[in-house]
Length: 273
Image (cartoon, rainbow, N blue to C red; front, side):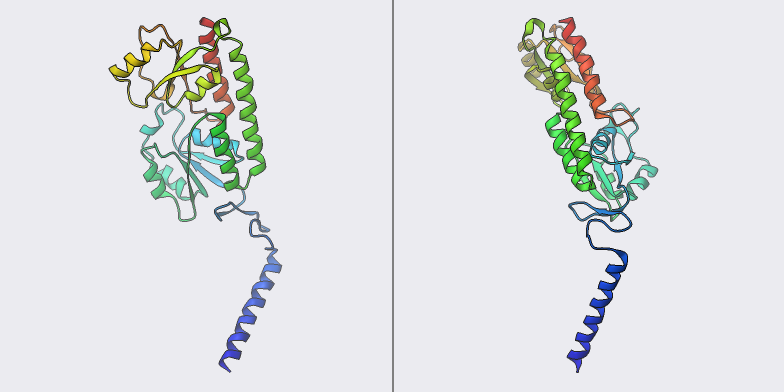
């Protein structure tokens, strides 16, 4: 008799569950009648995902991947984003997020992770404006957000713009030959945009006297510096033309504008050569 009662109870529970599924239209684990979308990690949210990003750099990747509801913690006016100290209101926003994007080199990353709500998905970003690496991150975010189609378009757009600007810059090479360049480690993507040959890199720490001598000996035509970590002339008296490049986009979170601005600075340097 005990077995019969257990079996009957189980059948009733199963019937109830099936009936509820039919009534609510939950035939797909990824989407429900209320617009709930699940990413590859099983994270669910109603409507567009609420994405909180530490800086406009992560924000640009999120926008390119198709996110619409994006909250940026560090104001664009902060010249060196890693120096920012998140406010209580920032951490409150993180607690309400569906996805929280941050970079491991940001000192406040631990605070951000601690503030994230139990339902938030933490996404550690690999920030690099090289179109190949940026494209890979955009594709990854598109899968997490459930916006693969938009992400594919975003990835294609940055590749197309990078190639277009690169062709324009190559047409300005002095004597038709690729210039040599020394680059800050976070702006090598801009060196590639110009089609320059990288003969050395420096940073993120300050250039030491030994590095200065080594880099100067390469006689580079260009020094591609990072606007967010600039320390003045990198190779003074070397004759190299220093170009200052910004990695972070503006409040519009437009990654294409970052490429265009970089190309404008590189164009000036190549024409002056």
